[in-house]
Image (cartoon, rainbow, N blue to C red; front, top):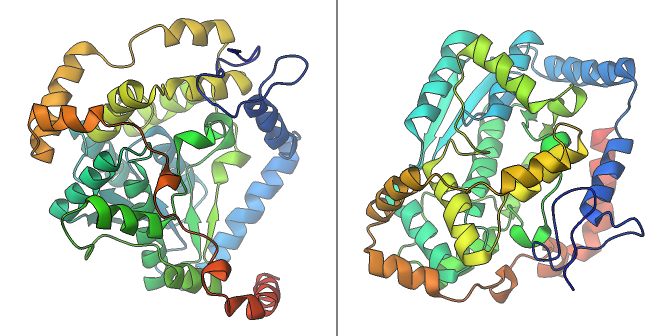
Length: 376
């Protein structure tokens, strides 16, 4: 039976596993409130936690060229985090992952960040032919989270650079006030390299050679050396519209018109592929998050969601561009789009390393104890 949340705009068509309490409020809104309750509401307590993190980052970076790493896309969150890092006196190495889909506006925004803040930039340019083949493999597999490929490679690249430069802290632009609501059926584990290899083997035409893989060995090395991800934005007031004004004034940042639309493929994926093939409109999760954080009203969100997810003229341009870049004819692409949607679990997925290698179960207690001792 169809049911929509009385607080946000998610409903039972969006998430087959959605649940509601007696007031009709969904589990996603309840989860948001739980996250919010774990965050100190006292500004001085938040400031203290923020300063503690800043002090740890600076201390770990003494005598090194950089004290942290920050991945930037040219989007709102990473741009604002770069600006705050400068204000905090941090010395991040900025890292941009170029997967071949950057919009011109994204490139300009990144240039402004680097020029105005004076940080070093390390750009990782993916091997396009290999990455194109991987994306096509995921398209042919008909799984929902095609962006898994970019997200996985970004995390792997950040870990690799952290180890290379002996940097302990990775600054994450994730923040719960705008990004904590997302049905689990819309995504897959971003670290699952086994899944990536499996789909590539079934639907790809090339070996994975240059694509950054976040395998168990890389994760082990990063954990052993104490590499940590810190979400500094969770300790700062974060109102999306106000943040956009700040970065526009300070860094001449320009808006893309959608969350993560700094990438042409992301724009096409979210605005068209997800909507048409999977019946998913990610704006509903984004707006629901903003409702929970008090940044928009439910009425405003309901009005916004009635508008097209994709500007028709921009879609026509992007459709032609994406097919040309993928080297697909319209008939080939439409055939892929017509294939039935599959679950990620229809293909091999990663399990715990302790499940894959039984012998490791014997040493797991020792490994956990060592990790705790190193952290303390």
